[in-house]
Length: 228
Image 1 (cartoon, rainbow, N blue to C red):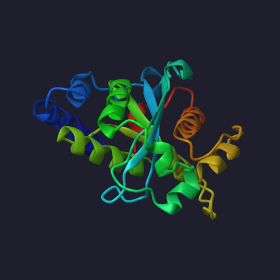
Image 2: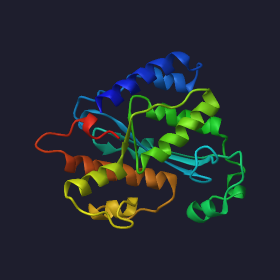
Image 3: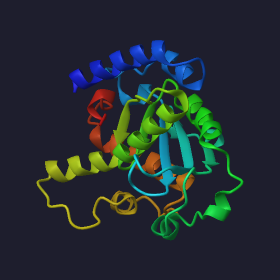
Image 4: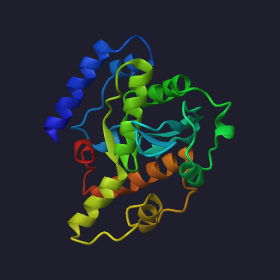
């Protein structure tokens, strides 16, 4: 884990120098979180995206939702939700999932206008997502296309944290056990609308706080022990 954190820190330093002036460089120049501190001392940004498909190389982001977590509390007043006009047609399979059609997105903002609010909200914070590798890959590619450099952020994956609990209990993982709604229900959290970027970001934020509390003993878990 430490080697990964060191690599991330070095990448941030390099990208801060290489990135052109603008939102991505501002993000990299913000103070990075302290990974050796308790997670309660850090701030987080739960993030969810909806896309035209599941391949970051061939598909595009169509919606971005994010919710800050400050002092262990979800801050809905500073949440954000942005529709994004894709540069390729929407796939029928994707429309069935999130309901966003080409017509609904025709007046949406281009990616270059949707990324700055996200990057500003993420500065100095740790990103949280359910199945974070998907958000990580799409947002890294999106930043590369807009700014010429990728987004290299520290991430916490609530799906990975759920898998850890199964592993510690030496319990098998059944079909659907790692879905966001199922993970929430297992911890007594209420149902939230699925496949809406803002609603899913809020759902991931609440799930993370419950998981982090469970991962803590007499003292809060260290941030580095929760990272993906």
